[in-house]
Amino acid sequence: MVPGVVHADIDALDTVHGPRRIVRVRIGGPTTDDGKGGALSPRDGESIANAAHVALAERLPVVVELSSTGADIAEGLAALHGWGQAAKALSACSGIVPTVIAVDGPAVSGPALLLGLADFVVMTESAYAFVSGPRMVRQFTGVPIAPVDLGGSGTHARTTGVAAAVVADAAAAAGWVSALFDFLPSHNDERPPIIPSGDPGDRATPETAAIIPDTPTGSYDVRAIARSLVDDGELFEVRADWAPNLVTAFASVSGRPIGIVANQPSALAGTLDIPGSQKGARFVAFCDAFNIPLLTLVDTPGFYPGKDLEWRGMIRHGAQMAFAYARATVPRVCLTLRKSYGGAYIVMDSKRMGNDLALAWPNSEIAVMGAKGAVEILHRGIDETERAALEAGYEERLLNPYIAADRGLIDAVIDPADSRAVIAAALDGLDDKRERLQPRNHDNTPL
Image 1 (cartoon, rainbow, N blue to C red):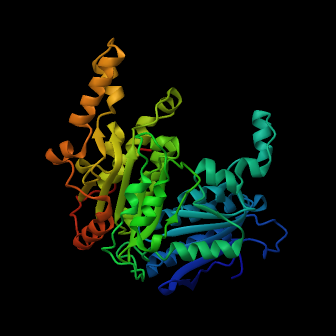
Image 2: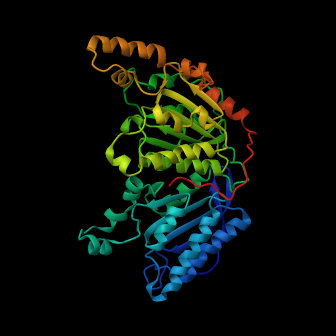
Image 3: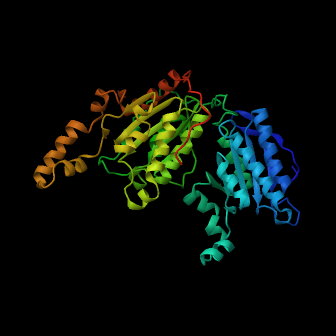
């Protein structure tokens, strides 16, 4: 493909299911020899827009391979108009066909904003992206900063969440995109493809119980539990380095692709903060748009407390998780592993948020808060002996899943060894789930 030519190629992408048709367009990059350092011309913007239009018309995913130093100054407003066209066209694809951008080089100014419109972005190690570059940052703030520190791929993987993954080079980026499309349909009216696996759906998982520490505050890696539940122990994690207190990953159960959202006790004790809420909400919304069932694994003591988080909008961002789950119509299974407290219990796909099956392990705790916090609030000024007795009584009477089950908030308390079998059976039973949606132009997501 020649950069700058107003066209899009329909290519074959190799996946485990065989070739998949996608619409691909390349802008800039090492093959560009125009003397402009990959600056975005009006024709480049039109190329991206044309690719998006072809993708919508053919109901195919669109992959943009991007390397651009920003709008071409010599072209003036025409170049800005070009990337504006691209932004509008990519926005039109949202929720209809998957959009992926692979960055192998710079993505500066207007083109950088295109990354925020894509469903997923993969960056090479040498890539960088920012809206305002180091020179402007220094001019306005007086602080010198290198491009890699301002917007390097590592920054976008760990700090901003723009990059779903960072890979070595362009070839690795192509491989990552292929692996991603193993789990995705071509458009929103299609089911995800079945992934071949010899892993029995009714396989017992006794090892999962041993992963949970004996102490209620002990740390562990929730990905170990997720791997034991899914086919062949394989997870395709996205945004792994951003908001690590929440894991988002694709996998399959009995060959059926699913999206997994899981609290991660080894990071911030599994609490929810602003980045975690944004990460989870975006992932849930994507899975819902493209007919991918959701499995939510819960082990959280609540929202992370702090003045800084509250001032930065914890209310608004925490609501994003609730909103994403509340409007999701795909099959949804929720499994409480150890504890689920307070507001975080609600937003992690609780029963009243509309999940299809709410499960819990026998030793899990579902309550407003833990015993220590509850006793401190309800019984101030008591001595340590009385406090210990009250905490023990609170744990015995209220901190168990059977109270929630008695109230209809948990559908079944299951043996950890039966978890995979129960989840697989539930997804089979929900295979033909359909929900009637109320007519409206669009909803108003809390941002």
